[in-house]
Length: 254
Image 1: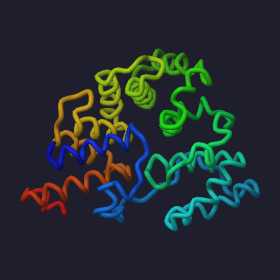
Image 2: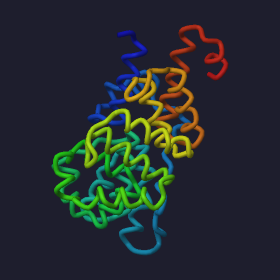
Image 3: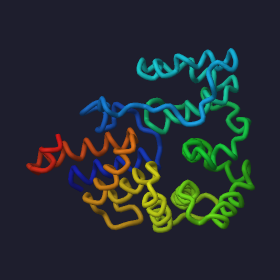
């Protein structure tokens, strides 16, 4: 296995597999997080003037860059919904790690968890990495809700992506890499940035599709243009790699 294939194999672990420490991540340890890979606030944040707990949320963005998430984790444990969503968002972006016992105690009691999974699939990634064997018992109606959404609107990109994610992990619908890639591609073609990034990883590793660095870079770029931090990191890394190998266009982009 050459070095490029090894790196691309690592990328799929970031997307679908177990959490890996940043010290072992070539995208971070070799190059650092690019300055343009900023963390955007998650959508749907309530007005921070509504209550005292929300007022406490003001420092969260600064805490991210200080790499101190202890307060954010505490707010999440105390039941603050915005903090819980923020925690998941940063976990998905690779900005923090989560300990099942310390940080996710009471996860299944999070308010409106099933609906949040359908609107913020990062919650599904937390489940797959920490609670995979419990989801079908804990949330028995989730499969039907995903299917109902797709039956009413087969073109809904978020639901397409969630279904692809389920196929990858073997949740509810069985494990099938080809189906996972198909549904992810459909969501990506509609401009859903997370699906574009994920499909890029699948192309790069040949998971469910033919392996193609060219296709991987294409989809990373599309997601990166929408501000997807990990796609920006992967695209930058691939350009660095190609430039080191003498690729003129990659050198120009750097």
